[in-house]
Image (cartoon, rainbow, N blue to C red; front, side, top):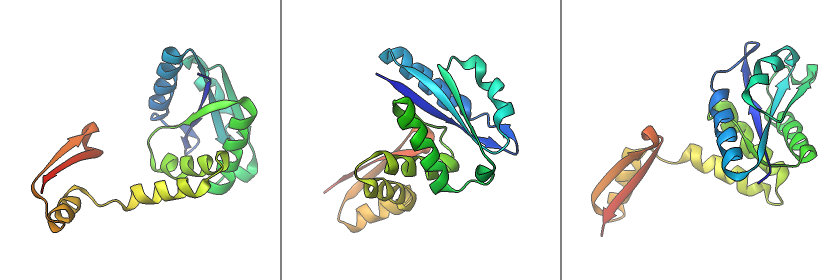
Length: 164
């Protein structure tokens, strides 16, 4: 494989505990594929937090500390992370599943791909997809019956089955 770049999220001048999920994912992926992982720490005044990330087995911790990154703005942050990913030759970019990453990751992908519109569509479709009850109603309106919904991954996704 290659290098997975993990984006470490901060809030209120502290690292978020949810970063451990992304780091565990990257470490597991690296072990299974023979790759490695690095961590990106982006923001303003974040340099002092890098030491807290040192014990997790990352090949490197890349700190981008700049006053212009004090407030999260998707476009400049995505450009910074995409540039870093390109510079280190990352083959994947990962982050904990938070509102922050759901906003940022598709934008990073947009910088790294030849088809950025596909990633805007993906994020929009995820946000605007109807909930389980509403989707079941749509299936019924389309003429399906005996509709069953199975929650997966602790209810974050569902399998919907219906008969014609």
